Image (cartoon, rainbow, N blue to C red; front, side, top):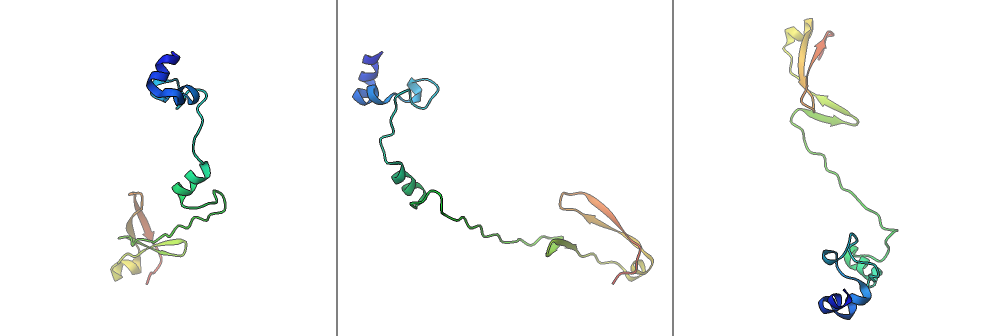
Length: 111
């Protein structure tokens, strides 16, 4: 077994282990040693020295919606109602964000 590992991976294979395709369930067999500087790898990957003190900033832009507009925490739906119905009452159909159709009764005089 050791001769096969040596033939395939050389002396480093005997010292450090062999890759998964030739080994068991771990990415490397027992005895694998990382031969690089983990701080250097972190700096190269994330572009900084401190793996803890960095802030993440998200910039969120609100997209316009075809049926609703936002006013603080509220969603506003604007419906045009004929004057006669606005005076005597009616039902306004509102399609919700999740696609349901709500029938909203208008019982009071509206502007």
